[in-house]
Amino acid sequence: MQIFRLVSLVLLVVVGLTACGTQSVKISVDSIVGQKDIPAKHYTWLSGMRGTSRNDLHFREFSRYFQAVLQDHGYHENTDKDAPIAIYFSYGVSPGRTTQYTTTTPIYEWEGGDTIVYTETKKDKKGKTTSTVTSTVTTPSRQRLVGMSVGTSRYTVFTRFVTLEAKRHQVGGKPRDMQTLWKSEITSTGPSNDLRALMPIMAAAAAPYVGVDTGETKVVKIKKDDPRVTEFKQRVRGRAE
Image 1 (tube, rainbow, N blue to C red):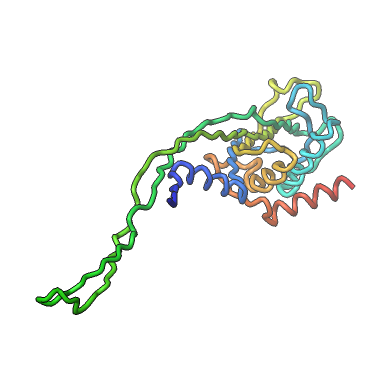
Image 2 (image 1 turned 120 degrees about the horizontal axis):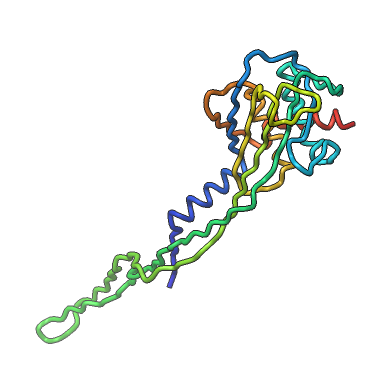
């Protein structure tokens, strides 16, 4: 008996999404400008995360990607404390959200397809055999549902985010008391929580929209091997040397 199992639609959808996820990453960018009269584009770069300093190795690596983006927009980092703009940089990844799904797979078997051989003998009036004819008949084959297979699987997704908030710098002032010039929020949801791998992808996707009023959330799909991603990696390595 030959058993055929047809994969259920739910499983196909999940597998398809996973396959797509290995090829490209979907990035959402929401950028808003609150002050059009931006002062000279010289900024001091600060951590927007409590407990994470500018000397943190991850902070330094991730910063270089977005400082390259800002450079393309005409911004220049100023190490002096009297820079007119303070840009607070923060990033993170949420705890994984695990979803369980059930797949129902029908199980079929083939039936029929048998070959029947029969012989027809003709005799005369005296009972003497005059001819013998052998014939075959094949019954049609078809599939028959014999049961259902039910299984459960899980997949986990993470939300990755980056925030850049530019403020009118006041030396000694608290961030909440400074005027916000613009704010860019970049998010992505997917199966990986590896920020080192994802940060150049997020920077490349968000590059045209950082510090620019998007008017709405922009969604960008970008492949991991996109030339823009490769360029950002090379620029960061060049700055680190």
